[in-house]
Length: 159
Image 1: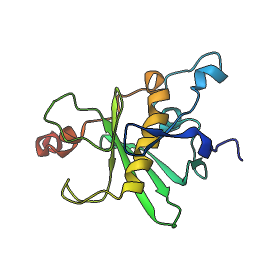
Image 2: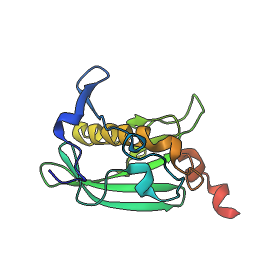
Image 3: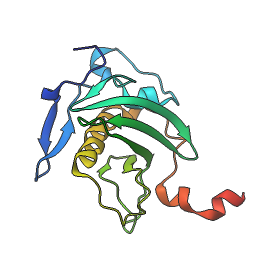
């Protein structure tokens, strides 16, 4: 297993009906201190291109742009899918992605506007990614991220 892999054993059953989540020791356990950084690499450590996240492989990490960062994953069947990482929206009426952490939400980028069903396997990948983010988010700079509602607000683009 490569040093960038998150083992299958680390992917655990979670929250009821077979939802997967990755359990990864925080980088703080391996290093004395972490510096805040803007890069997605800090938010997703130890993942990087080519790393395994349970049964998914990370194809690419895309730095925040327009308020969200993206992760391209490949499933066991070779199908690519994109997960977008946005700031968490505190509104109780906000749309929710398949994974929510204290500061972030992970959405499947399937162009469905909430009307398209999420493939269960891809939703589970989002939840596993959420566990990685949860272990790193306290030390990551969140300034480049917007909530889904903020990203969708046409008035933001007029400024």
